[in-house]
Image (spheres, rainbow, N blue to C red):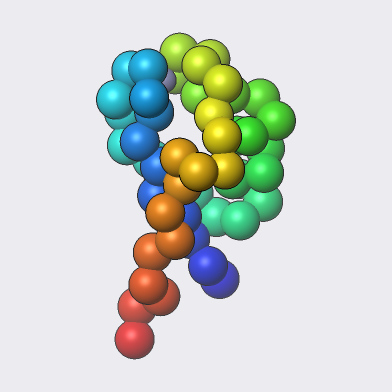
Length: 49
Ligand SMILES: [Zn+2]
């Protein structure tokens, strides 16, 4: 499964999330501080070989 890493632009926490978690985070905001998260805040991580 593709995972994504994002850095919260507000609290600077770094999270690794799966694709459905990414969509939920975009919908709900940062799980720590509630800042709005945009799709551009996510970077896809290469899957482990
Ligand atoms: Zn945050």
